[in-house]
Image 1 (cartoon, rainbow, N blue to C red):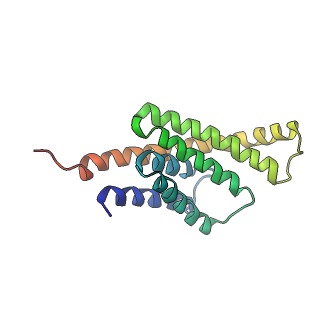
Image 2 (cartoon, rainbow, N blue to C red):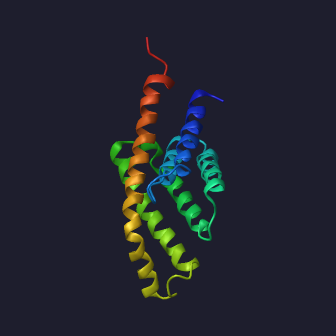
Image 3 (cartoon, one colour):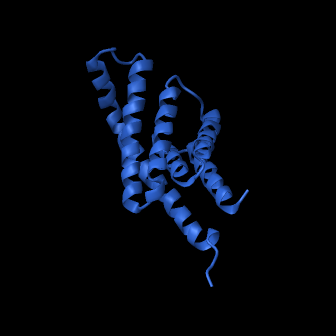
Length: 169
């Protein structure tokens, strides 16, 4: 395994550990893992497999729930967003992708909560209720996504410049 691939895998699995450590509610590296994997793995299969393996491994520790299909769907779409920015990684593109991924994840997972949990009436008003109830959690999700995206993308950029890129003559 080459150094770059090993570094990418180590970063994703290392950051996944934050899901199992005590943390503020909804401050999670999930979107960052997906964006990072999509943005940096040239092989599209690895871009999905490695982040998903880290997600599933951490889910084995923290547990599964009845809306996992929505979480995994949002995660897969976030990997796709990462693939979309792969050739244009910049602070502005990564920041926009992080905010967009947070919004997408909010929309998908709150729809899942409305569909699966029986907490809301199965009406348009019930769906709206589910989204309104999710707003307080969105703030932490967005902050967590921005923090972990900064750590992963910024940390990898430093690693590339100092360790992975051979020194020129």
